[in-house]
Image 1 (cartoon, one colour):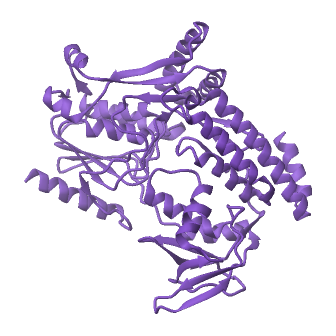
Image 2: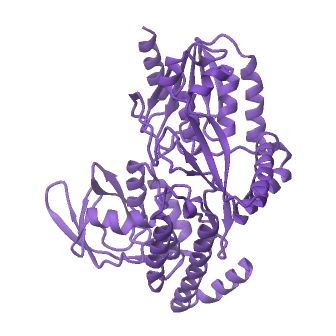
Image 3: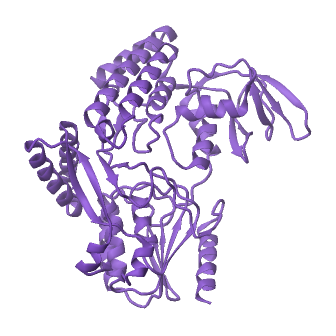
Length: 490
């Protein structure tokens, strides 16, 4: 079906009218499929603690449907799909960009914006652009009488995949100004203000350009990410562990497993830095494994455990959930290196879900554990089994999903210190595999909901000590962190 779709697209690109009709048809099919999947499998649809979810689904579907006639190409199709999903305010409910064909054309205005202290500033011009552009450093004031903040919040933000980190969400949305993702953004003129106080009105000329040329330019305008380097280093009593991702397979998984074995035997460190810069999650099992390897895990008696409140996950029992679990087990079996913790986990989950389905239940309680909380642990003298030194967690704004689960563990451990930048955030809906939509793009959707989690819905983690990491190389980051460790030691 996807092959036939691309044959139809190649034929339709000879006519803009035919292209519009095609992408409107693709959007309708993907909207219908996504709506059906969410209704059939999303835990929110039957969640008694979120009774407004079904109405929200109907509202978003209706509103996105009204935008179908305005879709003219792939980017506006993708923008409306993101609009549909963005309204749920859940970073785990989104759509991929898999079927974009590099080499096809993209519509752009020829300049990019950046978000700086509440202002939308011109940061770059597309090379070779033939036409009048606003000056570099100019501030966008309005387009056709629509103010810059209105454009940001109503024409840009809703057409992006949702992120619960406000600073990153606005920064990413502003970048969308250079790419026509909103079918409603059809301005004729935009007014800019210069540093001298003068204003200048420029025609808003959206033009079709090669996607190769566009992305060569667009990528160069993005802020450079300074991810953690995978691996560990022991120096001067400080063990620095870089964990840039918990999405591990193949060679990365093999290196991680080897690191775990080495860390279990490692001695001679008084402080540990868990560097998760750039970590956007994956499997929480890897975070648990690294914590246990370094510290021996949390030591508590059954009597202590019984005094702690429980946090647990409810999985929605559905054919959709079972299909996605089967997909995961199939992928794990194709890559022997990924078997082990994950395969065992999902195999047991599948068995438990099948038994619950046969019993006629709608929810399966799985992942039930004593809730970790620093205050409770300190009050009850609960601590790591093998390590009594300082645990330092270093985050940036990318930390989300399994990275946040790992951060929760570290922050709950006595002797821990959280430094760096405020993290992103999760909704309570988690464990989000993907399913292929009719277009070939993938819908990512949660299967479970957390109950009694200490961290609230879409609540970021704020560090104990804020460190501005922007523009710093790895050496500078380490010097800042070491300075904090030394001050704490004194």
